[in-house]
Image (cartoon, rainbow, N blue to C red; front, side, top):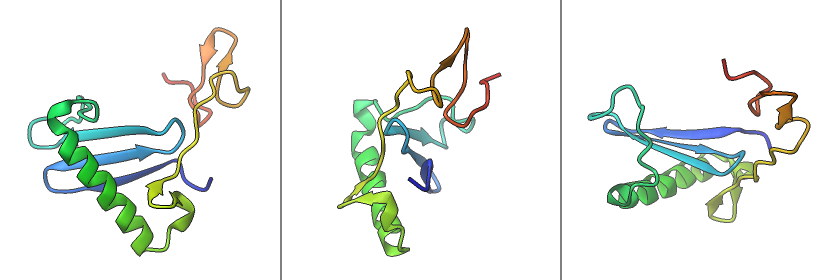
Amino acid sequence: MLFRSLALIEERFKYIWWAIGQFEQLFDRDTDPGELTNLAGNPAFENERVRLRERLADTVRKHGGHEALDGNELRGTTYDASSTRFGWFGDKIKTPWGRRPY
């Protein structure tokens, strides 16, 4: 996998797809300019989430990023917390990027 995340930013909404863990983030930039509230799981924003996900996949396809796609869907991998690369190290956890989250 050559990418960790993909994002699509519009005037009002910002959508982020995290390939590791297949995690989505959706922010309303008008009401939450600090991007603190993830709306991806909010049923009121389901139509926006689906629309932006499809638009991101279309944009990736249009620009030749086929390694980021699995058919028509965005490609991702499951997060394995037991992995020595991504999991616990003693009493400290590291992020998938190898940095401690502090």
